[in-house]
Amino acid sequence: MIIDQDLAQFSDVAFKTAVVLYLLALAVSLVYYGMVRTATEARRERAALLGAQTPAASAEARLGAPEKVLVGSGGGGVHNETNTEPPAADTVSALASPTEESALPARLQADAILRKIGRADRLGGVTQALVLLAIAVHAAHLILRGVSAQRFPWGNLFEYVSVVSLFAMIVSTIVLRRKAMRVMWPWILTPIVALLFYGGAKLYAQTAPVVPALQSHWFVVHVSTVSIGASIGLVSGMASIMYLVRKAQPRGQEKGLLGVIAGPLPDAAKLDALAYRSAVWALPIFGLGVVFGAIWAEAAWSRFWGWDPKETVSFITWILYAAYLHARATPGWRGSRSAWINVLAFATMVFNLFFINMVVSGLHSYAGLN
Image (cartoon, rainbow, N blue to C red; front, side, top):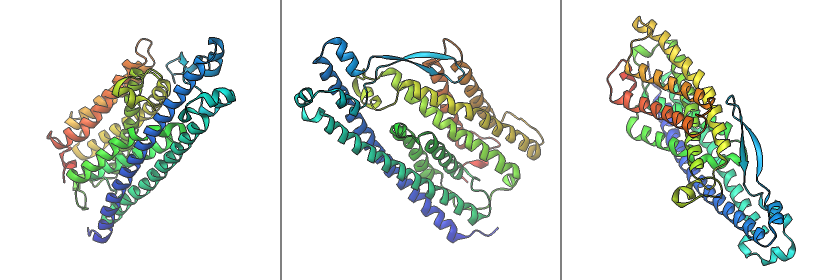
């Protein structure tokens, strides 16, 4: 099979461009993250000062009394959560009298806080635009690579890492499409940039035909399904990590360096729901990928299952996702305990991706550094 070297070269350029765009998006998202934190702290300080100037009952009305809200756990029942987050800056300013407003420091006055929020929102929009552009260039890289070799572009570990990263970014764009969720972009972009940088620096393989063992229609079905499942698992795992950080640093009670990091994060309930809903999709899709792999193994090696290291760890990963969903719906396990299981499932998937492919010898070794 003849490789179109021009298209292959364009594919490599597109990959490098996508990495640069993701890096830019990460940098902008970090600035956005910091600006959201600054605006949030100013809003809370303003609310505290206004509350201190009024009787207790009036202060409670001004700040918004702690409100019990019902949070659906997506199959794990319904539980109460106290919402103590101060209202938005414009709501607070509407409740401040002109005298109170003028008595506040300039940086805590409503107009100043609204300007901070406006600047942060614009940076959030820039982050979103850079992410979308990076996804388009990233997709072009894979399409050009596939066309240049006249095959699907996931025939080695470099391509697999690229495909999983692209799917993860597409999934993230869907789940973080709302403005209030954009603050989570640094948490998603960091592992994606790390994956792509490592893939390009250490795993890169020139465009070439796939080995004979991969010349099967099951190659496309199995790898694409596993890639989608793994990408959703990445989003779910990062959401659980954010959830654990937020649980350790409740809103309005952040302390130390971890508190600085946790400051802009959404409520723990939202992060928990995101992790759960993502895992609900990751479990069956990743499981289907394992099943398709077993069918392919029967056709290629005359057996459905042989306890090959990659098969085994993939099965363990699937079991861990199932355990997470079960724990998430079990009283006494819901919350941090179940979140740690999800993080373990994510870590096992990463272990399978790198250590099993690159270090352990097995029938899947051809997927390594070729």
